[in-house]
Image (cartoon, rainbow, N blue to C red; front, side, top):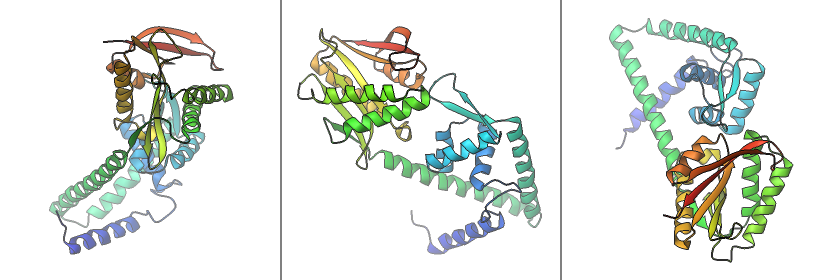
Length: 316
């Protein structure tokens, strides 16, 4: 549906004026020493109670690196606090401290005063029209942004077999993720690099296969089936990982689906995988493909003591 050019220009002009009048041209906002992105983060945390840094990045539409610096600063200034999710040990939840709640109260008081002062210049009927119009326009902007994100992620391609850079990229993704969520270091990274390098040298054997998810030429996910290292006609699911930015779009499910289809075609009597306790989102996906938890033991083979879990999927 086309929009008349005059309407477009009228909305653009009004939007620019609102940005100026609300103070967004300044380096700080709402009578605080904080930037607009910080103000929006604090207000949304008041509403949601807890959020991850990734969720904040999605909400604000900013790069994760910018969010990370902002969050660290707010934690240092005791506006935010961090805790581990009860449902997924990978997730670090952010929430307001008592100081943060006081800051938000002051922001709300300023904002309410600002809106009330402006609305006093309008009749009640016009006030409601402003509220309805702004809400409709904000919803339309959000819908357009989300549609764009989905379209971008839908361009992810699943590729089969070896591609240049796969050893280094799988190693990098694992090192980054597990250093953050499990405290693993150089030893773990070296083990992953050695294992992936050894495995790709055996990809010419028909019982071994690897899949990668690629976005704009970059590997953003992977999964492999090793049909040799366990023996006895059983398969080993290895190096299943996905970049945080690509979660929630069905890419992980598609990778696992293709891997399980391969296992069924090869006729493996069982498929095993080893993972770490606390990765509940991944566990739900495994269980959706008929994997069952068969053991849960603590160990330090990765350089740090963790609870390692084994899941098994039997031949249908």
